[in-house]
Image (tube, rainbow, N blue to C red; front, side):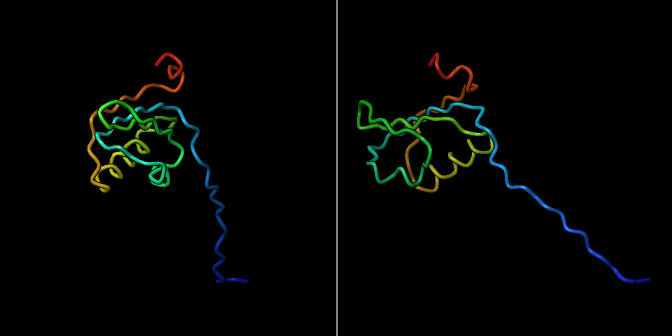
Amino acid sequence: MPGELRLGTLELESKTPMPNLFVKIILQDDLSESWTVWFEGLCFEKIENNSTCLSGAIADQSALYGLLERIRDLNLHLVSVQVHPLSQAGNL
């Protein structure tokens, strides 16, 4: 029809980016298994001095900043952060 406005549809796929970074975060907090909900996908390891190591594959720098913001928002005490390309994770 003349003068009719037709809106096309744009399909956006929600793709989760493939992980390409390996992160190791040390917290000066003794976290129990109940905290895994807050850091889904990361491995928890209790280490010396009542600290916790979170480690695992993440998508990119944005995901890293999201983790750091969550740590801050939960008032956890950050000791160190190590980030490496996922291809080097086996060497850590």
